[in-house]
Image 1 (cartoon, helix red, strand yellow):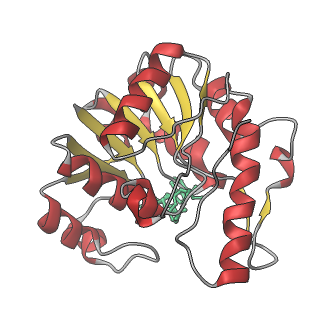
Image 2 (cartoon, helix red, strand yellow):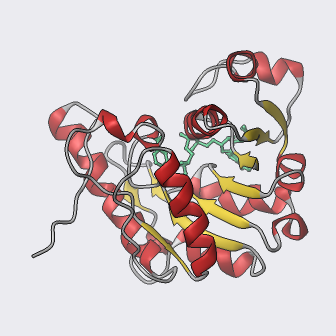
Length: 225
Ligand SMILES: NC(=O)c1ccc[n+]([C@@H]2O[C@H](COP(=O)([O-])OP(=O)(O)OC[C@H]3O[C@@H](n4cnc5c(N)ncnc54)[C@H](OP(=O)(O)O)[C@@H]3O)[C@@H](O)[C@H]2O)c1
């Protein structure tokens, strides 16, 4: 499959590498993919020129990454996701599965962050993305765990879960298959995209545990009676 990942940070790079290892063709979309920009150190992940050399993936504009793909992943800063996806282009997103990995987090008071006030409980970033791009088939997934775990769930021992939600059952099936291919066994479906409110909230547990344990290799598991 041709996959366009909007965002070239640690998440975009890690998901991109994992999906390329599965045989997919991946393009990372950033705002200004000049040679100079690709050589720059990034706050998360490596300089993109190194990522290209290591993986065989490509880097392009956000519009090019979305236009040339069968499936799109939003891996941008949560507060900039709608702007970034607008650069990707509403028409190119129409009819495509759009996996939303972003979290609308407010780091203004340091770590751990809070959920951005406008998304506290009554809506979610994923629902706002779906409203802004109604023809896209938005599935919230991969946002509740650290980037390394997304493509290597075996880093966490024992049973643990990758939550998904979305309004389109066929789109969720595509994402579930992709998750299984990446090694995920448990992919609980939280229902329609309102389920993203829970996903964007429970990431706070994952972040809080970084503060209390000093580690990042943890995740949640829902046990049933
Ligand atoms: N880090 C993790 O382990 C983790 C885990 C789960 C979920 N997440 C979520 O995944 C998302 C990506 O995280 P990340 O750490 O990889 O990267 P990030 O630093 O949150 O975002 C990087 C991307 O956002 C784009 N961006 C920033 N401001 C923009 C703007 N005003 N307009 C358009 N694009 C803009 C950047 O574009 P340019 O490249 O053009 O600068 C860059 O490609 C975030 O929402 C994060 O909360 C992260």
